[in-house]
Length: 115
Image 1 (cartoon, rainbow, N blue to C red):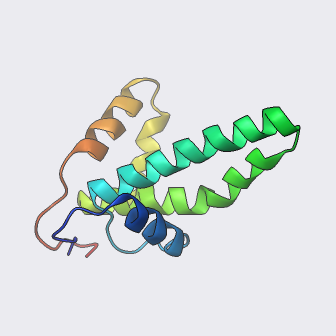
Image 2: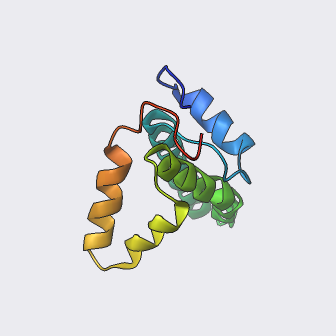
C-alpha cells in the first residue's frame, strides 16, 4: 500500500537512491516528482561544473540511471500498471503525453497487485 503522507524532497531522493535496484513496490507522485527534480538539478549543476572546469563530471548522472528507471517502474505500479507500460513512450509524441498524464495522476488508494 502506498504511503499516506506526501514525501518531501530529501526523503524522496534518499528513498529512490536506496531503492536503485528495486522494481517491487510503489512510488507516490511526490516521491517520483521530487526525485525527477533532483535529477534535473543535478544535471544542470554537473553540466555547469563541466563547462567551467572542463571536467567530465556529468557522467556521474549515469550512476543514477538505475534509480531513475526503478522510480519510473514503481510510479507505474502505484497506478496499477506494469513497468512494461513505460515502453508506450516509444510512440512518437503521443507516448510522451500518455506517460506524462499517468505520472501526474493520483495513484490507487487501495492495495493493488504491486503493493
